[in-house]
Length: 92
Image (cartoon, rainbow, N blue to C red; front, side, top):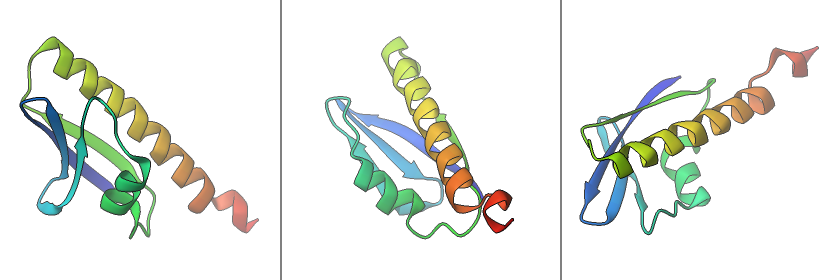
């Protein structure tokens, strides 16, 4: 399932929201993101393989670094979920 997350910022707090679903949100304070929050907001009801994109209008260098790190994090999460939950090898 392809999903798009939108990264925004209020002062020093980042917010990651599932595009089109304002109730699926994770707050990133002091550059710390909670794994349980990620699961509850974006993966709890996952029934298909995952592919996550992150969009942002933020343009400062520090914001780009945060976005890059989040993209790496979500790529790793998607890979592990796809491998452990939706892999064809498990049915063989």
